[in-house]
Amino acid sequence: MDEQNLIDAALAVRQNAYARYSNYRVGAALLDDRGKLYAGCNVENAAYPEGICAEAGAIAAMIAGGGELIHTIVIAGGHDDIEDCTPCGGCRQKIAEFASPETRVVLLQPGGHTRSFPIDDLLPRSFHL
Image: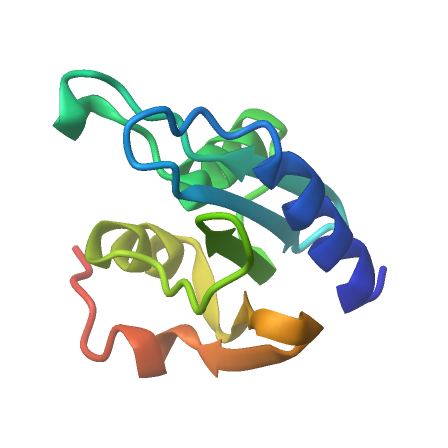
C-alpha cells in the first residue's frame, strides 16, 4: 500500500468527524505492521475533555483489529481547508506506544504537500514503562 492510499483514507474519514464545537475536523489513517489500514476521526463532546482525537480512534481500531505496531500514520486536519495539524501531546504519546524507530508520522499540508517525521522527532524521550 502506498502513502497516497493513507492520505485518501485520512481525508475521507475526516469528513465524518464530529466537530460541532471547534469546527476543526481531523482524520487519521495508519498502516500497521501487517499492511492493514485503519482510520479514525475526531469526535468532540460537550464535556470538552471527553472528546476523542482522530489518532486515538485509528490506534484503537488497529488494536481492535489485532494490529500491534504502526508502520505509518497520516494526519489531515483543519477547519475548512487542510492546515498543518500536528498530533497533540497525548496522541504523540499514544503513537509512541505503538511505534518503532522506523514509524513515520506524515502530516498533510495545504496544497496536498506532506511533511514526514519519525515519532522521536515529535516526542523526544517519550515515556515508557
